[in-house]
Image 1: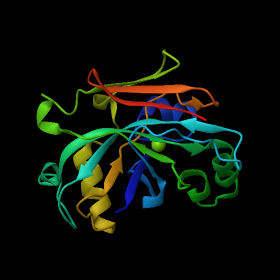
Image 2 (image 1 turned 60 degrees about the vertical axis):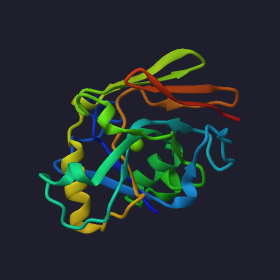
Image 3 (image 1 turned 90 degrees about the vertical axis):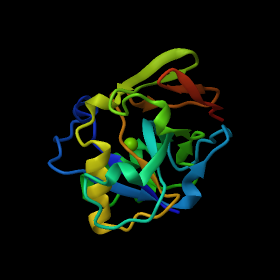
Length: 203
Ligand code: MG
């Protein structure tokens, strides 16, 4: 199983990190050892002093595919959930300045928090899903899938031109604006279309 993540997929977030609007999806990978699930606590690693949350809608791939056309892309995911793409922003900033890859900032253990997954059939329109993150009961991030620069079909089609998608792979589809630092003692809760899917602590 692999995790494919999309960077810079919400214009307002692209601006908050002073990045250019991409012409095609920006992707990076996280290994399976990055997964943190069942609302287990996240322990801040000692190598970073600026771990940021990024709330994202996550797709679970349901069958193998390569060179998938956008037309057929919806057949490749049946379930959706929420995830936190934890990012060591201090390391990422340093690596971006030097033109180096992002793995140390993005792929570390437990950096891919995932919720339980729900059938996409329960949503009337996957392109009008509000999702929200509260920290210590305060709203920190609100997004809507209608604001994605690259829709799910485009992401699936684009990625599968390069990398075969397999059943069980996860796609983190990008974060809206409002990213920020987590601290020990924080409680993170997140909702997808009004349904609470994440509720865990930072230690
Ligand atoms: Mg992200």
